[in-house]
Length: 583
View (tube, rainbow, N blue to C red):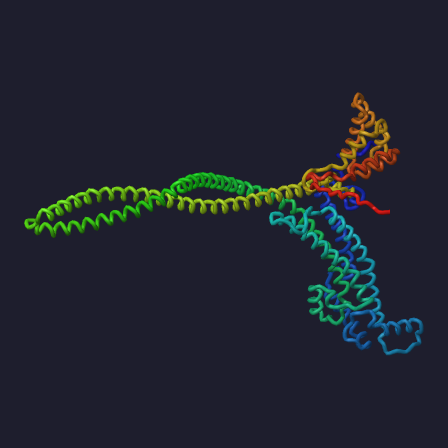
C-alpha cells in the first residue's frame, strides 16, 4: 500500500470521529465536522423528545395529563407541594407491602400510586440513561470546540485589542453556560432523589409553563422538560460559538485595516508634530543666543549706566545753579540799569563785571544743556537695551513653555503610535494563528505554538542557552557525534534509515572539516527537525551515549555567575601590628 500523502489527507472529508485520531484539516473543516456532529446529536435528541412527548410535542398537554394523578396521591399523602422523592417515602413503603402481600388492606389509591411510581421511573430512565448519552456526546463536542476555537488573547488588553478580548470573554461565557446546562441535566435528578427541587432549578420558560399549566406545586412534572431544554440550550450555545469563531477572523482583519489607517494618519500627525518641535527648538536656540548677547551687553553697560546716572545728577545740579545765578544776576542788572547815569566809577565797574558774568553764564548754559542731552540719550539707550533684554527673556520663557507642551504632545503621539504598532502586530499574529493549519497541528500534538529557547537577561542581551550548550558539546565530543545523533529524541519520530542518511550526508558534506563542525551541523539539524528541542533533552542524550563529562561541563558553564559590569568599590585594609604576648 503506498504511503499516505498530504493531498490525500486534505481531500478526504473529516467527521467528528476523525478528530480523536488526526488533526483537523483546517478550522473551517473543523467547524463543519462539529456542525455535522451536532446535526446527528440533534436528530437523536428530536427522536427522544418525540418518544417522550409524542409526535405533536405538546409539553403543556403532557404535563396536564399527569396533574390529576399527582393531586390524588399528594392529597392522600397530605402534602401541598411535591418536590422531593422522600415526601412519598411512606406511601412507597406501603406500595412495597402491597406487592409482597396482596391481602394487605389500605385506603391508598393503588392505581394512582402505581402510576406515579411508573412516571418517576420513566423520568429517571430518560434523564440518567437516554439524555445522559446525549449529554456525553455534547460534552465531547464542547471539548473539541474549546481546544480549537481559541482567541489567542487574554481577558484584559489594550483598547485596540477589544475584538480579541471580547471574543475571549465570550468564549469563556459560552463554555461556562454550556457546561452549566449539561451538568444541570443530571443535577435535576440528583436534587430530586437526594435533596429537593426548587424554583431556582428551572428556567424562565419552564416557570411560565408551570404557571400556565397550574402545576407550580408539582415541580417533578417540570424535571424532564427542563432537562430537554438544557440539552437544547447547550446545542444552540455550541452553534453560536462556532458562528462567533467564524466571524472572529473577519473582525480581526477589519480591525487590522482600521488600525493601519489610524496609524498612517497618526504617523502623519506625529511627523508634523516632530517638525513643530524642531521649529520650537530652533527658535529657542536663536532666542537664547539673542538673549545671551543682550544680557552680555547689558552686563557690560551696567557700570557705565551708574556712572552716567551720577554725571547726570551732577550736571543737573550745575544746570540748576547756573539757571538760578543767571536769573539773580539778570534781576540785579535790571535794577542797576535804572540808576546807570548816577553811578560812580566803582559802581560802574561792578555793573561791567555783572554783565561779563551774565555773558559767561549764558555761554555755559547751552554747554550744560548739550551735555545733559548726550547723557540722557546714552541712558535712554541703556534703558532700551534693558527693556529689550526683559522682553526677550519673557519671550524665551513663553517659547520654552510652548516647546515643553509641544514635546509632551509629541511624546504622547509616539506612545500612542507604539501602542498601535504593538496592537497591529498582535492582531496580525492572531490572524496568522486563526488561518494557519500548522497551528492546528501543534494544538493536536499538544506542542507549544511558538517555540523559543531565548531567555532575556535583565532585558539587555538575549542568551540562547541551548546554542551555548551545543557549542560546548561540539568542542568536547570529538568522534562521538554519530552516537550522540542516534541518542537524540525526535518528534515527529524519525526512522533509523533517515537518521543514518542524515549522518552520511553530514559526513560527506563536511568531511574535510573538524569534528567540532560535524557535531554542530548534526545538532543544528536536530534542533531544526525536532519540534520539542530543549537543553534537558540534549543532556539526557549525552548521558545515554556515556558522555556524562560533557553534561557536567554544561551544567558548570551554565551555573557560572556573570561578572558585574561595574567594578567593586575599593576597600582600604588596615593592618594592626602584632602585640607582644607575655608568657
